[in-house]
Image (cartoon, rainbow, N blue to C red; front, top):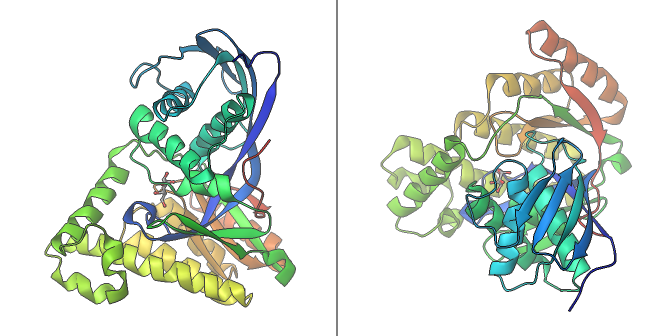
Length: 366
Ligand code: GLA
């Protein structure tokens, strides 16, 4: 069947994880929202055996063979090649053609720009070929592209967020059974602003720290005789007394306590208690700083300055070691808090962060 002759447009957003960090590959819980910023793919299929991909952030296009295999394409186009590869491995048809990508989600900021790109490419190919694949399976295909083609050992958080997001809602994801529950998230309606503070300190996942955290959690689970930390969630953090390695035990303590915080955040959101949500965000940040050790002094300072300036709470969001901080603040204090954070970063010799008020946006779509 020929798919030529039409141009398909498909968009996918970035995401902010409100709470539940590094819980995804531990089969726990997370609560992300999508950002209004979106990556857009324009795809014109043809009958050829290669795909020519252009990005508005790059000067040169990349031509990739439909028979591409891991290792062949690197850099930004590896995410596209990975989706082409993973879709075919899952038994789906991928035609050749021309693809133009407008990347609306900043890269290296912990906002899941990779998942936005993967899911936009995937959605464009499925739409152009009239193939239907459910969203959980789409997320798995995009994850396979990232894990096996790009080589980043990430979980399913980003792809599920991007695919399931809805405006003014957050998604409670249970990674054990991959179910997603839609939770009202509209701080504006309660006179509260969600600030996104971009440190501009870039982070990376293919690097060793992400994999090291994953390995630590796996060792802790093995020491407890279970296949994942989720299996001991109901026993609380006391169970970790039986983990011999103190570092592994601290990593696992973050996961078990973070899962409980996600569920507590959902309860607080259901009664619009943003004071409690803010408190949980700050406790989560402390846990990422002290137990999971994925923050940096720069990021800690942003979160602390926001709280000192009156935010209800603040935490780093995303994989760690840089990227963005989110802060919840009474709307009438949003500007003063942003000014205070900028001033504090200037005083400490850091690059001034970009601070913007953000909202829960819609998920991937045409
Ligand atoms: C990155 C990964 C996700 C998840 C987060 C941390 O965004 O891609 O799978 O592990 O880090 O919560």
